[in-house]
Length: 298
Image (cartoon, rainbow, N blue to C red; front, side, top):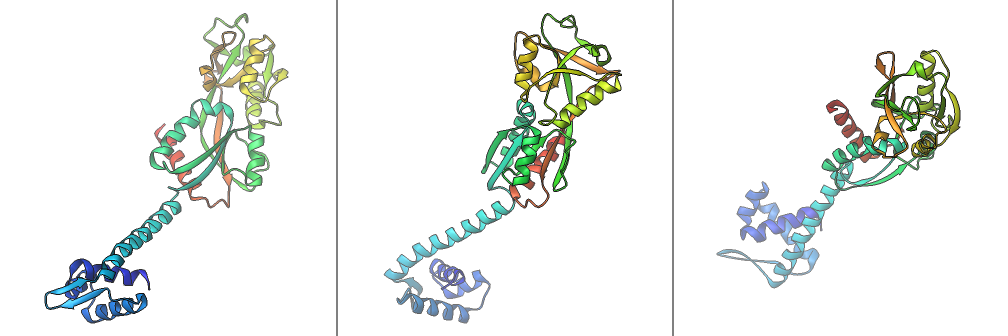
């Protein structure tokens, strides 16, 4: 017994006619009759009776028709589920991201992804770029939102999403606290609070390179591996810090945020998606397509 036989039986039972059922199935009538007889032999009961008025179901046929319809419906559902999984509409996606991206970038990406993929289970974690690199290498995450450039990323693919502005965080008693905008070159003599190079080499490289373009190397007096901790150090008066623009939504009374310029341009850093080159998870590739749409529409 196979699904084709069940479809043939259901067609005859619903049409109450072998001729009409054959027309519906686009086959000739004799093989349809033979197929139903073989089905009855497999079942071990007569399912249909023929008379001069057409075809009628036996009691066994009535019961069999109900289950045959259910079986065909479940089979179609299985096909649809497999197709949805293959297209990334079902499954699980493990996404990690630098915590500062959790304020604006990640919510935007996830909102768009959920619109078209509401049945994909998301497992999220906020981690530094170095932690994400380790997780990607171990296969414990599918995709990471990181700050490039990445070192030792030979087994990874990296797609730049966009550039984000940096702002200057200062304590309220700082001489610059009342300004709206400052030039980076004017910060050469300041004490900086920064991100540990081993935890976020891409981010700190951007900060150091921008300062060096303006003629000085920043003097880091404190480091912290979380941006909120950096803001806490700034609030304590231990130094100033270049931080992602998204952190302006974090309300700390003892921190002021200022625009910072490198000559006439904003100081910017990149955000990128990193994932294993051999990762075949359909949900991953669906997420990448969503990220591309968001990037183009930004």
